[in-house]
Each structure stands twice: as structure tokens, then as C-alpha cells.
Image (cartoon, rainbow, N blue to C red; front, side, top):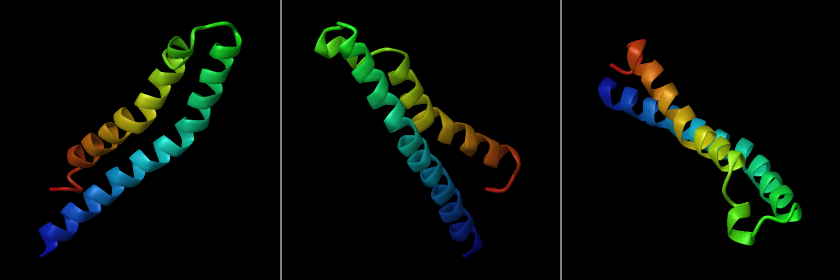
Length: 77
């Protein structure tokens, strides 16, 4: 039973980290897209750039780092 609780705790922490990263990164992504579009970039090109990289980092890479740190610190095992 403890293994199941630890697994659920692990998944909850990683999931919450992903959600927080998405929520924090979304306004940055929207503002970056609008600024590029207003500066004359084509509509599709406005969606790409540094702001997309930041969004991906906060939503995907951040939770991956949290998961790896939890595994490394043996709080999951």
C-alpha cells in the first residue's frame, strides 16, 4: 500500500509542477506571440521563437527535472 501511495504522490507532484509551469508560461507565450505578430512576422512564424521554448521548458522540462530530483533523492523509491 505504501508503494502505491508513494507512486501517487510522485505523479501528483510531477503533475502539479507541469500545471504550474503551463499556467506561468502561457501568458509569456501569448505576449511573445502578439509582440512578434505586431512587429510584422507572418501569422504562423509568430507562434515560434524563444517564447515557445520557454513554454516548452516550463511545461515539460521543469517537471522532468522535478521527477529526476525526486528519484535521485530516494523520495520515490
